[in-house]
Length: 416
Length: 219
Image (cartoon, rainbow over all chains, first blue to last red; front, top):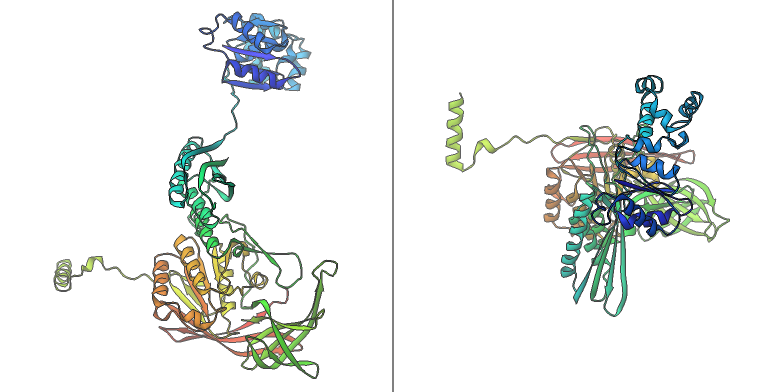
């Protein structure tokens, strides 16, 4: 048995009213809500009594229809004012006089039926089924079943947004990381079990620690790939707390996981190996704790000619499409000194003849250059360089530059 | 014949306490192309590339990374001195999105720890540890046991572990030792045209590879 509410202008009220009677609710459209009222007869009574209870609860004028067929209830509530209770088997009789435009068919079918002179659901229901199937196909048969009140579909219940959040209040404050890890594991195991039941993973962990005599400690871990493994999430939280300790005893823990679809990857027989995402996350966190997160990642070149311009992006083991161009062979590459080494350069006939830095003191035996490069003069950090490639005694090759704004020389890198 | 073989095995086991049936033939390591003629890096082993500045160490490493990332494999570069130049590497063909770059701020100890973590994590085709940017005395301080541990970790994997340094430190732990030396450079017409490198491949063979490296001015 299904009840349908139809009223314009207040969709939230319809859902709220339906929730009072049933957990299985379908929000059919903005002005129509369908819900399951099976079992209410033992609590409230006859279908008429149920309809009256719904009307009283709604508090505003709504059309209510109760029927064993969900679609019949929807059409009756949309087409008949007030309350309609359709007895089982009586759907066709009640729907008989309703206009054909209540049906959800395509405009072409509606136009065709109109051309045939079919105006009501009763007229469509009375047509020969074989003729309808031959002329209108599966859509025609479905529409006729709807008109007869025997489509017999299932309810499409409205689902609450998934929330994976849990908290734990402690009798005694916890100071050390190790006992705190046990509590975190307890919460995470429960949340991960719930996530597994709903076939989802998480891409973000939010941890809130309520501290004794200190403001809340919050940390958010964003994961590049969805993870559903409790042990991995626990290890990541442990590493995060080891790097950024709360600094005061913990009174309450709250963990919230953001649910997302799990990552599904099809491995191929001839595909090269790649790091396992969960292990990689832990490895990267450990290295970040060791040397700082800004020193771990993948380099991204910036769209500028400024020397040594790049930014560190987060490394991810997701497969990228590689450049199809063939690899250049035997390319001479540069090793950079960061920061560039301050150099003293002596000249001989306007050509660098001797260089002296903290790492290199030598006569220059050959030079190539100079090349001018400048840019960003319209911003705060302009550069204006005069670059030289030099060969020193022994045959080593270096790149040096003069900062034309300050007149200072720098050893930029070594061709290696 | 089979009975004779079983008899030999039995008597060997009785005499030396080693079961010959469990001894397996050592499988030759798969070799990784570098794009430089005569130089191929074995997987599952430690390879040392050593030499003074301008001996082609970084160019050999970048060529290896370029081939591996083109396959595409994920590679890791633990850069102890922070000397890696991404623009230059990209010009050499390295797919930067497949490269994990770890900058250790001049600490050889941190570089070693990071390398250990990355190798333990697995999944990388090439793991390169660049110690050429730290003082030689710091690199020399790394114990042989550390190198042995790294070699042992990569042994049963398909990861090629490459060590770039000024002088050889891993001693017998490395399977292939490539020692580069610049023999000539070409600067003509106000342009750096190239660098000729002579590399010796050891320790089992004393093969040599001579190649000319050319700068890519398109960078």
